[in-house]
Image (tube, rainbow, N blue to C red):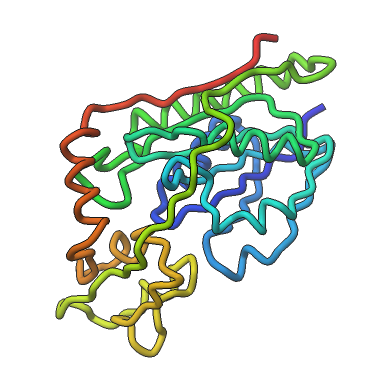
Length: 261
């Protein structure tokens, strides 16, 4: 039985969206897209069933699934759906995020047929995994998608179990000091930053003003600014960027996990 394909993703800087769309393109199926990036989109209840194949992608934040998605993910109904968890990380490590997402979806009644961890340009610095996912990554994603269809065509009686890396308990979520990007004189007041902020932290009446209690340091505003007017000038983001550039520049490859059928 061929199922309806839907991709679901949270992607402030666009890297996760690119990966998940490439996987879907590789299946050769038509598909629907559910983008959870903006606040208004996360109020919907996601409901899937036995006629659905769902590829769900999230970025890795400090080795975990973004806590911002907790309420949305908790509301998912997926009894009998076939699902594929995908995480995208910035070339450091995905730690417990893929295991966490796998566990969440299985707890919702989904049958997982595969999983993957891909690499995207780090949100803090383009010097780490710059330009990724690149053409090599996207081709890998398409082949992975094609493999999903090959597995479905075998129509196993029940999806086989498989393991992914990770630890229990999951990596502790450590609080970080509230901070927001600064806005320089190059700002042209186009409003792209505010319209694309996944938490609504940026003031629509003053694009240089942002609520530090809402900012998740995703760097969507920095990456999307057409005049490069936004940046973090000091604090933990700058110091961690330096550490990443010194320690995480060696290219890592996507990791794909499938059961033996």
